[in-house]
Amino acid sequence: MSISYDIIILGSGPAGFSCAMQSAKFNKSVLIVEADPENLGGTWINTGTVPSKALRETARNIYTYTSQFGQYENKKPYERFKMRDLLKYKERVLENENSSIKKDLIKNNVHTARGYGKIVEPNLVEITDHLGNSRKVQGKFILVSTGSRPTAPSNFTVDHKVVFDANSILNLDHIPRRLVIVGGNIQALEFATIFAALGTNVTVLNEQGEYLPFIDAEIKEEFDRIIYDMRISIHNNVEIQGVNSNKLRNCTEVRYNASENNGELKVLETEVVLHFGSRKPNTEKLGLESVGVETDEDGYIIVNEYYKTSNESIYACGDVVGFPSLASASFTQGRLASCDMFEIPSRDSSPNIPFGIYTIPEIAAIGLTEEEAIEAGHNVTIGRTKYDRLTKADIAKSRDGLLKLVFDTDTFRLLGIHIVGDNATELIHLGQSVLFYGGDIRYFISNVINYPTYTEAYRIAAFNGVNKVYKSGVGYDQILE
Image 1: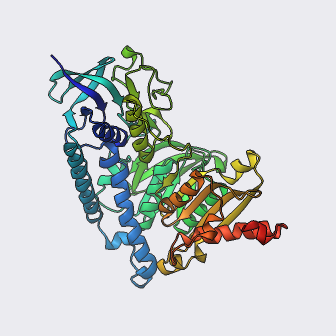
Image 2: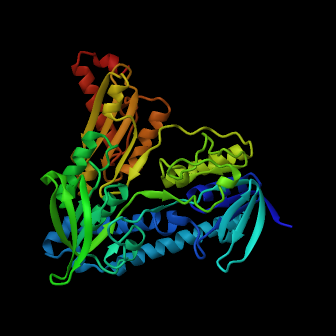
Image 3: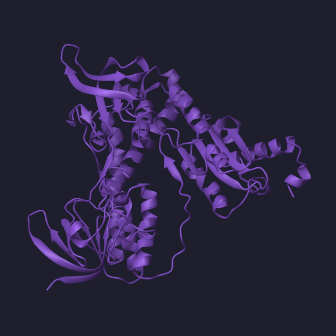
């Protein structure tokens, strides 16, 4: 006779972990099935979000120090620091995070099983461990949160020695002097700035027409200037022809056609290549078709607003449902799915989801861009401030950056916030709160903001926007009433 649970969760990433914790708080019996034989947390903790951000933090600290004092030492960071030492910090962070997730699950009486889960009936999961042994477990509900994986390149091989992917780059044994990144997604730009901060000469070959096309145009322009100063070269709309070893010159060559030169064949010499392909959901071999769970043409599971699939007892969250594929969003998705399963009322989340890009410096945004606000019919005014206006940024020697407020001229209602600069991913949440409650930019003027802080950028940008409205003929008494 099989064991029965209220919910069986396939995958222990942010969506699965969040759903497990919320369900446990509802006094439900929970089983997490995890394919990794050693670690919990999936890509989130072990190979993606957490380790890459740990490496980023180390690189940012080195970059800050080098920017302030490095000119007196005449040495590149890769001449002063060893990659193995930088990665020790990452390993300590991973050890702490793995320990933390295990403690949370144990404390909340969440059971775990190691192996591969397959849905054989709407309420039945077959678990096959790494020795080939199988058993079946019943669940009133099933959550699929098995994540995604990077696709392999079509015309060269990732050997994890010279050509790396997002996972294996975190085990690199040295800081390369030259790096070519193939791809133009968020991770590609994050790693480009991480290695540039360590002194590496970085070139990004982006096969798309542009990189990060969804961010506000003015923020993109500021970021372009910043990465130019970091000596990062980006070539868009290229076609990769291959990656080969040149033993005579003791280097690796990346061959590509450049549209900016009428398709001329170019060859880049490099030490290391880092490939970022598209992501593919881990939805094969789960038995979804046999239980009527619908997927789209790319394999992503189709769900409703509460993450229920076309089968009443099966839910799906995280990367397997596609956009936005953010750990932050996945935590909320898992909670909402649990609430819907067990008919517990939940406060619906705002459709405005903040995004954070952990480049050096960071990029963050929420709400409408300037272009989107105009297209939506708003009478738009912009309030902005550069970081070089902030005393805090001057003290911290982080004067590159821009905070931009998009608001309705007639009502002063805040429509969007866009930031590039240090602490952008933290700063965005103040704007998020004002946006959620339908507030206007005068909030940042009417309330005291600590000085000196990066948050003061909101006050300066709000005054900048209000002054533009004043100059257009609206009296100050009307503006601040």
